[in-house]
Image (tube, rainbow, N blue to C red; front, side):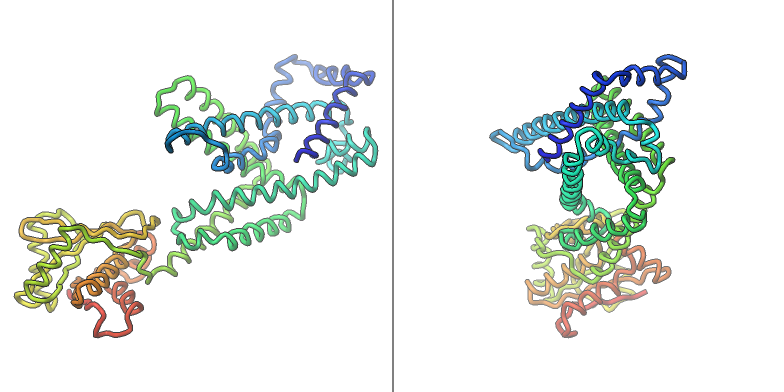
Length: 460
């Protein structure tokens, strides 16, 4: 990186000297700016239209944030260290922005002044390689060759840096799409997927640098827009008026650049859509593959829940649970539910019963510990838990009750109305569906002995 920046500095410095020492270079450029008439306003329009083309100069900032965990921080507690790390990261990004801004503006200036316009046209010697053109034409073939080699190497390193940033950033968001954490933490498959995508993009664009640059610019701008929107919202929440206004203006500028880039080169959006679609499909496959997993490693019953279980066993030596999807959660609901279940299922006449309820949280959330709490509603006792999927949580609780008490529990359900396919899709996406068959299948996979397996009874 240091060698590459040094070579760029040499080219930019030499070009700047050439601009002011070559007869007619400076005056020719200024004459070209004013030849069309219109003064400053006449130059502003083309400059605004050309602004999105400068977006590749922002390349690298998107991975700078991923380096934040490596930035030094000071402080006696976590909050202080985090504040210190944020300040130091801001310094890092500010210095990087200043360096890149100087390089971008300076090299754009010297290449525009010193290189004939026809060489920038398609097929021209400077098309896509303006600095390399200057290096070869003004500093000799030897220097130009060294610069070409350094350019190739820095692009390799940039690709590796981007890969490292994506491997660190993307997997933490994959569970939000429903992908299992074990899949998201598998670094090697993620690297292989990115590699396949890169090779596919290269083949699709025929290794054309300009075409791929447009797609890359779309990705950078989309990331910048999302970041600027988030910062604008944050500033507005803290009632920082000037900061909100400034970030809002920046968001509009970046939105304009993104829209113009998509209009000129829509390939980036197509590639992004394909990539996102692939992630969603893989996540759905991951979720479907986990259908019959317990999804929890440990279950904790609070004091009241343990007392409910102990009292129920002391009453008749059995554990009878009625699965309930809570509605009002009042005495009338539990009374009606018990009468209904005793009428449709083989609940022993004088058996003591407990209610089992699962509150389905975000089906994309994953937790290793399932917390079961005991709730008293009038004379009715309820075991409640929150989990991403109801059938898996019910199966896990039934197995935990059997293993800790030595009593084979029985759980009573009611058939759900509706299409089995609809219930399957609801289970995959929402964590709820036709619960009894899924619970039984999970239990069957966990214990091949029917005599030890918790009993599942369905009526209605």
